[in-house]
Image 1 (cartoon, protein in one colour):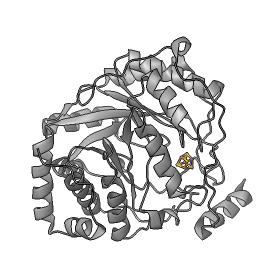
Image 2 (cartoon, protein in one colour):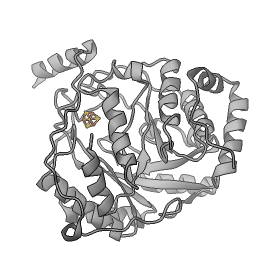
Image 3 (cartoon, protein in one colour):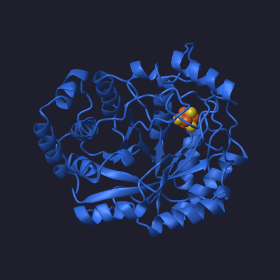
Image 4 (tube, helix red, strand yellow):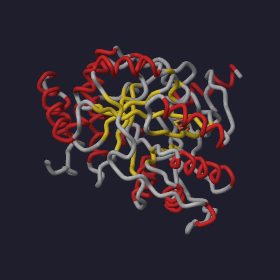
Length: 364
Ligand code: SF4
């Protein structure tokens, strides 16, 4: 087993990303085989437990209330609804359920208590539970850990420099702070980003520097290809070339050898052959289900046919880490503190986000 490096520089990562394609693929596949079973791929189901109406201005996101998109908002799902969906996901080969809520940050109260109950319920189904709920405090991370949370997702999205061109309502340092809060618990970290938002290759490398220099590195890194949605500021961005996606996966694999690299949004734009090359280059996790929060995703049956054709097996739950214990609400060591943390609201505006917001006002 090689040592994990936490001191990658942007230049080194750029050199890897820009290697001749076959050389890059070979190197990434070699690292992959040293650290993982190349025929096993983890399957997660992403569930939008509270959709739309988000106060943030992420330029790629159809759930931001300020943009005019086709997304219909939904209140928080019930625990029973979530349990039914989790059982369905389990029956189709998923080992993990990731619950996403379109919130800026978690607020202590009834809704968060309901999410904690969802976490307990899914953990008892012997599935890994992940949440992506926006920014959280250390106390909230502890309460999620007690409920049996396996992973918390909070993406860095892009490099620190390009992040400011996409999101103006919160800062990069807030993202890092939430990741740090999760790290103080035994919950694993899932953090990645999106390519195809108009960023330079240097920004892709910058994002991989930010992720790979975390110590420990995230246990899971989703690589998304932008799904450009009408009404969002990034609606006119061109689809990501498959070669870029493979290069990004391969580079992530080389600099974060132990991490599960996840093919996330944008798989509907990729051929099965393209996805197979991503698996060869080190991707070993996918999101399953016909929707990824609000954007389309390949049908589960299609994915299973692809697995069969490639001789891939879905990873069993808790292969990488033991199942967390669930502490019932009544026995909890941690109480709601009702904190009102001062997450930053950076003082800058993004022109294309402002234009999309104005257009939305006209259309509404
Ligand atoms: S990505 Fe998340 S935080 Fe950003 S607008 Fe969408 S739901 Fe809100």
